[in-house]
Image (cartoon, rainbow, N blue to C red; front, side, top):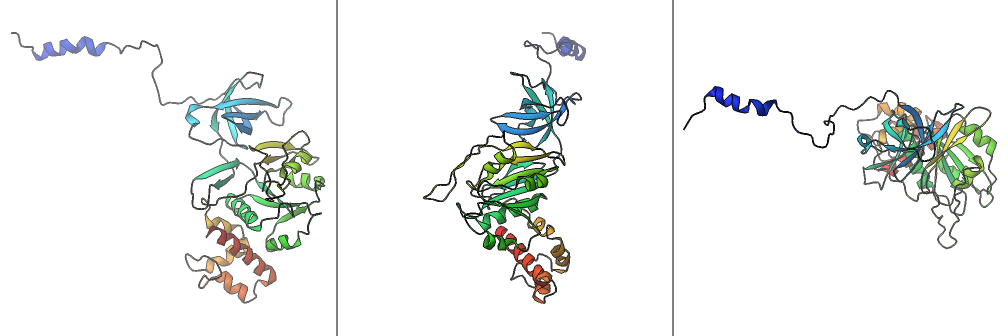
Length: 343
């Protein structure tokens, strides 16, 4: 029996170590290094439908067109929503049968979110990069819901989005009592009779902005969008005469351009909802939206809730002393109602 020396042992494996691993499929070796996609073009997501994204490419230029895209595999865990600005590669011509690929989501300026309910901190992104929220409410049929509007306002303030309130169907009921709930807010209000919208005023408010339209089912939101954008053809629902509830008609969020002499704007129509969870919201963001009260709140004790029963609350004390007048009292009531919505 012959024992192998150390040199013999090395020779035994020399051939094995030098041989390359077989690759019968001929595939390239896997790598974690992703391509930079320097040739990518930028587009705006107009709508999302079952894993396909309608993206506006070359917006504002003579070559503006829509392209259909899918998402790259590295983005499979990231939400891509209406209003997102994304980078595309592949065939971005928009020709029939072509499919581009979204490889990047550009940084978002704002994100409007909601959760399933107030105890659920898992958020769902509704739209991205909106700077205004158009809250559509009916004066009657269905009856207005102040607490739902409070929730919209909380979500808007949390996202840093400016709210606008549009009250429709004022020919059916006087909206005065409903609007009194928001007297303390610096809130732009637009009213209209049934399907008789102040279109010029609305276009003036929407021009140059990206505005997300929200509202309870049946309040006339999609009717309003159709009036602003005649070729939108959004489905219109009717209110059930027994339950007083509207029927869901819009199943997805869609962006439409709103033109005007002052420039271009966008309105994003969203599906009607009957609830709006706020489990993800930070209460501090609500106070920041009341800049005058936030300044006073610096003198509050740490952890102050600013609610009526909060001990040593500087805002409560100044309002009780009449230092802020009637307007201050109304604004504090609005703030406390929104904070109580979260509490």
